[in-house]
Amino acid sequence: GRLVRDPKIYNNREGSRKVLFTVAVLDNYKSKDGHYHSQFVSLEAFVPGKQKDNGVYGYINSGDLIICSYTVQSNVYTNKDGNTVYGQVLMVNDVALLESKATKEARQAKATQSKTTKETKKRTRKQAVA
Image (tube, rainbow, N blue to C red; front, top):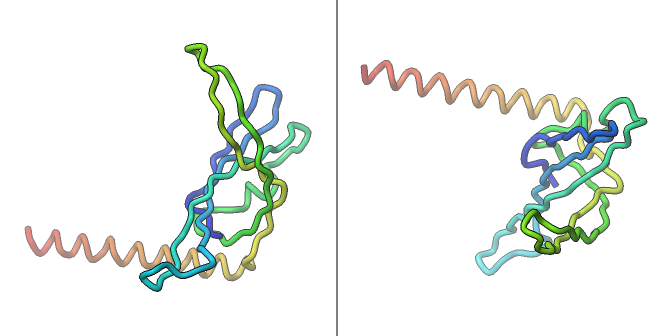
């Protein structure tokens, strides 16, 4: 799928890092309206403290096409009110980039150009109204 936004990297006390990111993934079937819809999958990864950089997580950005494998882990803890909270975490095992560097750079350049064009049109409309 494609990254919805840049990964968020949090530093832990002992030097390791927790990485959170969301991937938009197309369903493998068409809905009743004849379209493919997306699911948004929130994932978590761990970077050990002995690793000097953030690994692949330092290279991926919003819009990048990736594939990853993960395991489902139970997350049980007691909150500050003394209640037990049950949850699940999708913990990433592996990430692979599915675009070449040239493809990624071309996509980013096109997005930047589109954004600049929209901003220019907006300014021109404001000036025409004033």
